[in-house]
Image 1 (tube, one colour):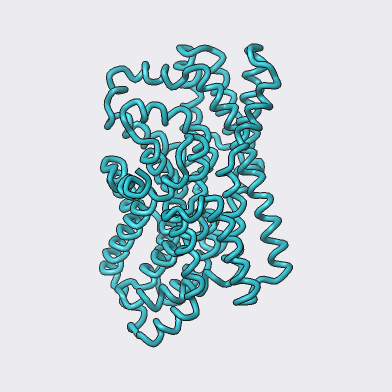
Image 2: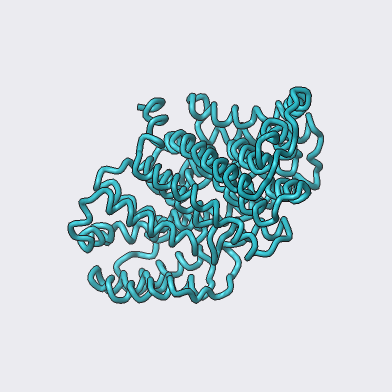
Amino acid sequence: MSRLSVMRWQKPMISPLLTVLAVLGCVILPLMGYHLAFLFFALFTMLVLGVPIAISLAGACLMFVLITGQIPNIVVAHRMINGIDSFPLLAIPFFIFAGSLMNNGGITERIFNFAKALMGWMRGGLGHVNVGASIVFSGMSGAAVADAGGLGMIEVKAMKDAGYDEEFAVGITAASSTIGPIIPPSLPMVIYGVMASASVGQLFAAGLLPGLLMGAMLMLMIFIISRRRGYTRDAVFSMRVLGHTFKRAFLSLLTPVIIVGGIITGAFTPTEAAVAAVFYALLLGVVVYRTLTWHKLLKVSMETIETTAVILLIVSSASIFAWILTSNQVTQNVIALMGPFADSKVAVLMMANIVLIIVGCFMETIAAITILVPVLLPMAVAVGVDPVHFGVIMVLNLMIGLLTPPVGMVLYVLSRVSNVSFERCMRGTIPFLIPLVICLLLVTFIPAISMWLPTLIYR
């Protein structure tokens, strides 16, 4: 799980990017105050040295408080506690638990077999199956790493056994896994909603159409590549096989219907939907399929506890960081530095996209959201961007970052579960970055793609 990337000490990441950021922090931020310059310099220095993100955030903020001497120590503790005292955050452990239960309970395999019967007859069939299964699974887990680690193993093995190029198999698997945090439910959307004080329900609704657009664009790229490489159909369409696999997967396919449908129709809050997902996954795994043993349940429970603790520690540390930036009017000073470009919606959105993609290459998604929301969101709102729309833009950018080195968490997970080198995983992903970037630009500059559904339902 992604907890490994944010709490274990990492190898020092002496990259040109972070070096430039540290230099800029020392040169530009004195315009805002040397104390803030020190805050950013301390944060980036610890990140470069491989200090876990949560400790880097908390440590930099603590040094800032001690140096300035203007903030009572009790305020730091109070702000950190308030940062995680939020009802929507209760959805996080339940969605993580539900996703792990589905991966360990045989649900993912049934979904993959149904998708294969439904789309395997197309040119490059298993590639399309890969995307289709990820779209369905995204309505259950809400995490790219869960998709890559769960479905990824099944998908890559099936494609290699069918004669597909190894790089193509891991490339499309990595790219399709990024749909998970866009289509509801979505863990990054929950974190963004808490940090931005935005409606999590509206964020979930806003991600549905962009997620489907991502799937359609990836399938178009699969068709193009399959035609160039001579990939044929993997199966003959059979209503009998489709009916059989649908019958086996029917109860599993109801999971996203219950979760997404319940949230969009207002039957559930996101937190209630997460609890319902856990209950339903337990019902299928323990009672219906009987694939979840006590050993598996204990293992999944411990993984969920560890992952949740890490995420909440990051959110708690980031809350004091965000409060320091807000109270020192960092966003207003950045807007002033941008000069005439600060009033241009296009310029602000392009700048935000560039920053988010670069940061996404080096930083875990949840940490990036908690750090960047207090800086970028006020700038976007100032030029008329809806916070819900900006949330989709932010998460989509960071998903693309998951596919790019040096961090590339999805690539590392797939490399491990598929026994393919990291370099080959990276090469296989490159063609699929094109449709994802096109989707990003469409979502950024055509707000209706993300805002139509939440406007229809909630406003």
